Length: 337
Image 1 (spheres, rainbow, N blue to C red):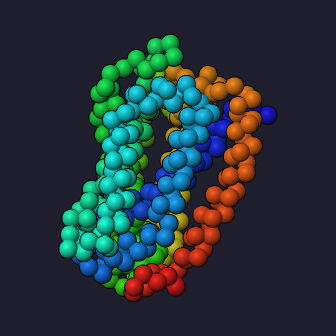
Image 2: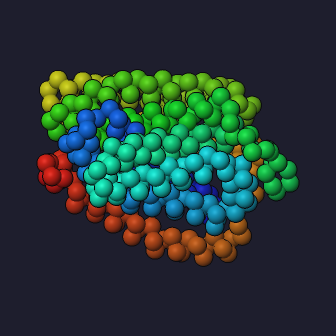
């Protein structure tokens, strides 16, 4: 049993759960300016209030796991991505503060609304830019970062930044369709359809650009025999896109079926994450450092695996319980039913 591979999948799982769980509440924040001031914004915020801070548990787990299990990768990635990571953390802090102060400082509610939306957008863009910078490659000399302060900034990283923000906005709109009713649900449905088109267009654009970043990507996606193994991924993306479009149409025309768009949007994210894994494997820093080169010693991995084996079921249990308790639509006054 290769414990390094187990840790790689654990960290990948934590990152994916963070992306899809915190992604929809960041998406709600990104959509805030498109919602009416007053009851619509209040209900939208109440829809994520019970779960938003718990969702960020997975960011801590992913970052902490990277530091503990793959210290070399952490030591190289952090200085390469200081700027977008700092921007992401500041955005998350700003939206967290605005989340609390919005209710306690009603005289400045519009300011806190702006801060909530701005922090959400900055965090989403920063996450996408960091992903793009990692994919395009980080210069490494020996066991250290060999690039400059601005190496993360490129047309490709900006494209991935906008793509992640658009995808989060789609998740946020589908979440509001699932969790709200009346005018807010209808508004979210109206926003979800163009956001679906923008998100799928962004997936196509990033997918088209990625193989030309490095030869390894090109070989894996566009040359035999790799192309035969990865061909199901774009086909499934196309199928899910059609299903999502139809689900949004049914929800708008007939009412009900409100959960299907959110589930299908999550499916799109899952497929893009699979595509990301196919592109990078077995590198943790593409074409420079593999997971085995970056891993800590085996005894440390085994020791930490015991701890994560205890903690992970607990985290999953209380996360699932929170979503179960606050299931259903958000009614007036913030009640779930």
